[in-house]
Length: 329
Image 1 (cartoon, one colour):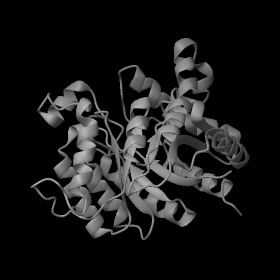
Image 2 (cartoon, helix red, strand yellow):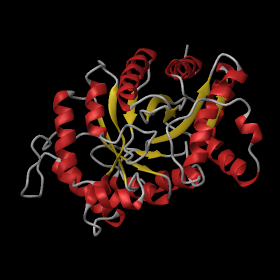
Image 3 (cartoon, one colour):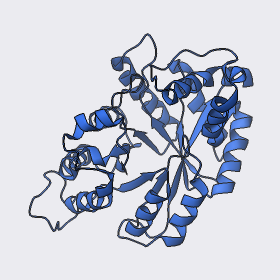
C-alpha cells in the first residue's frame, strides 16, 4: 500500500532570521518539492506566533504558486472563523483565476491563535467555531455555478476551488463526511483521535459533486538525514519549539541542541512522545519503514509531510530523502 506525498509548510521564522527570509525559503522549498514529485504544497494560517510567518496565507500561496509550474498550492488551512466566507471566496477565486487548476482550499474551525488575537482578527465575538458548518456551506455556494445568495463573489462564482475539511477531532470527520469532501487530519501534532476520526469519516461518507468516495490525508512529521544521529539532532529544533509553545512561551524556531530529547523527563517527555507518535526520525531506511507502516495501519490516501528544521538546507535534504524513500522506483 502506498500514498501520495505532499508538503505542509509553516514558513518558519528561525532565531536570527526574519519573515522575508522565511518567504524565500518557502518558495525555494516549493520549487524543490515540485521537482521531487510532491503532489501539493500547503501553507497554514497562524497568527501572533513569533516562529510562523504564514499569517497572510492567501498572499503567500500566490507567492509560491507564481514561482512553481504544476504542483498544487493551497491552504492547510484557512481558519474560517477568522474570516467572512465571501472574502475567502474572493481571495481563492482570485488565486484560481491566476493559477487555474492548481489551487486547494483547506478549511479549519480553530482560530489559529489565542483568544485575544482571535478577537483582534474578528472584532465580532459572536462569530465562532459553532458557525463553521454553515460558513463552509456558504463559502462553497459562493464558488458554485449558480449561487443561491444574491451577493456574488467576483472572482469566485463558478470556479469551484476544491474544498477540504481539516480537523483534529471527530467534529471535522463528521462534517467532511456529511458534505462529501476530502478530509485532512492533523495527526502530525494531535494524533489521539486519528483512528476514530478516520473510521467515522469513511463509514458515514456521503458522495458529492466534488468527491464520489472518501479521501483521507494525514499529517506526518519527517526529520530525515544521512545519519540517525544527525536526524535526531536536527529534529530537536521542532522539539524545543513544541515544548516552548505548550509552556506558553512561543518563540522563533531555535537551533538544534545535542541530546535535547534524551534530557526531557516526566510529563514533558510524555507530551512530546504523544506528539511524535506520527513521525519518522532517521535515515532513508528508517523513514521508508515508518511511512510504510503508518500507511498500512491507516489506509491513508495521501500524507502531508511537515518538517521543522533550523537550517533550510537540512530541511530541503529531509524532504528529498522522504521523496526518494517513498518513490515507487
